[in-house]
Length: 426
Image 1 (cartoon, one colour):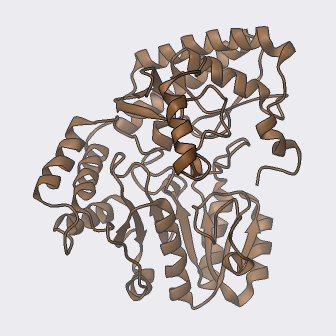
Image 2 (cartoon, helix red, strand yellow):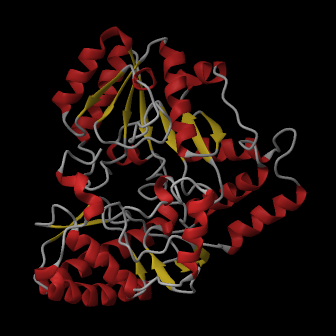
């Protein structure tokens, strides 16, 4: 798909002059196929349109925030109504209390809630609360897990210093012995254990949490007085209507939320139990826009839909249909394609594809057929998707796999991903 003389290319050129690197963070397309658009114009339901007018079924859902559809009428109407009354005011509105009550009613382990803007805000607040509660320093967390872009956890540490990332010990996700060794190494200075709801690292297969590992994390925190933190920013509300680890019967002390809790409006949250209440009240965390009322109005509508609709059952059924259909088409085309993680947050990786040349080709062919997928990051399903969307996805996949089969003998390495074979993914 050519981008020469496109509106997207024009904006990229202009951005390079006024934005460092042209774009930054996870919105930069530097690690995507070259034909992927950088700039978009609008979204509706399960679809997005780029600035050149091309329409895509969006399997990224804005990297997670779209749960009930772009421009959802019910949620956005609540946002706009509150915007007309007041948004960023000298103090919060009553909606803040109502939203905290709604979260406490919905999430089993939660006795209180605090609100912020980004997932990084919430995870950093969780770490600060744990250190205030225990008066200890060390955080134990899984190798390769993503918990945000603050200096203490950012995966690309350029510009940080050693002390920013001090007092951390790493373990292998789902490995009980590795977790136990990390906790033992922390000794009497363990503040908290951080855990992702499932293993959702980039570039590698996803994995559900082993219940034995999750239970052992809970036991170790209880034995040492440390706090257990489940970082549900990415997966919250796509796996359960409760904290994601409720599915395996393990309750954390703290959980972090973001992405889709206001269906794309800027809001995140830290939820906690009474054990951590005093510590949470003692820390100083704030932001001029953390108390905005309009996103809280959107979040209340979102949580109402979570409570009152069968959205989770529907997206799970759609995800199962997508997974089985893609397996059939990949097998028919002669490819071994691994689909890992929850069906509502799928990741596709080809066997015998260490530098992702097959994945990049497949993703580009899907884009050319009107479906936006990602070659190495987990994707997301949303409740605006339909059976017809899944059929469109599978039709596109059949064509893309056929094109990949024809091109496979001549595919070249992806230079921008050379680091994958030269020292790992971090």
